[in-house]
Length: 281
Image 1: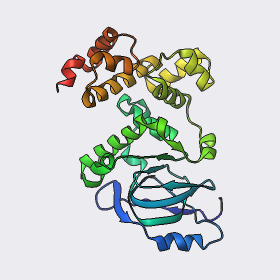
Image 2: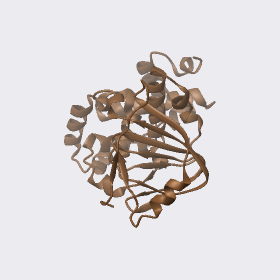
Image 3: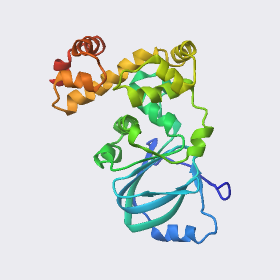
C-alpha cells in the first residue's frame, strides 16, 4: 500500500472553511484506476466525510475493501491512505472536507466537545457508519456562515455519540496511533457510561495504575474522571429528555444514575433547572 500514495490537498471553496460537495460519482474514474496493477491510493491534509445518497462505492483501506451503500457514511481522518476501487448503481453522494483550523484550540479540554473528541481520537484509522439518516448532514449541506460550523460540530457530536456502532477501517493505523491515556479513558466512559463504572475498570482498560491515571486525566483535561462521567450522563439525559417520552426516572436509569433523586440533584446543579423544566423548553 506504500506505492502510489497521492497527496490531495483540501481547498475549501469561497469564504468557507468547510467544503461541501453534493456530487454524482464517475464510474469511469473508478474503472480507470482499477486498470492499474496497484490501486491508486491518496490521502488528504484534512478530514473527510463521504455519504452515499444513492448507489454503491467501494474503497480500499489497508488492502481491505469496504463498501458504502445508500445511507452509509465514511469518516476519513487526515493522512489516511485510501483508494476508490469500484462504483455501481448510478452512485450519488455527499463529500464534506475540513481542516484542523476549524476546530477550537485545546479542544480536548472543552467538556462541550466530549463526543467530538471521541470521534477525533478513535477515528484515526477511519470509521464506517451504517444506516445514517440524510437529515444528519442536511445542515452541513445547506447552512452558511457560522451556521455551517455549528452544523459540522453537531454532525461530529452525533457520530461520537454513536461510536459504538461504527466499523473500524485501518486497524494498523489505530495500533500506531499514540492516543493519550486520557483519550482511552474518554473512550471507555463513552462506551460504558450507562453502567456502574469503577475506576479499577478504567485503569485496566488504559493499562494504568489508578492513582497515575487520575493525575494524568486531571492534568490533560482539567477535570476528574468522574466529573467527566457525570457530564457525559447529563448530556445523554438532555438528549433523551428532548427526544423521547420516557419518564424522568426512566431517563435517569437509562443514563447510568443509581437513583432518580441523584439524577435530579446533579442535573439541577449543572443545568440550573430541573429535568422537568428542561423538557418543557
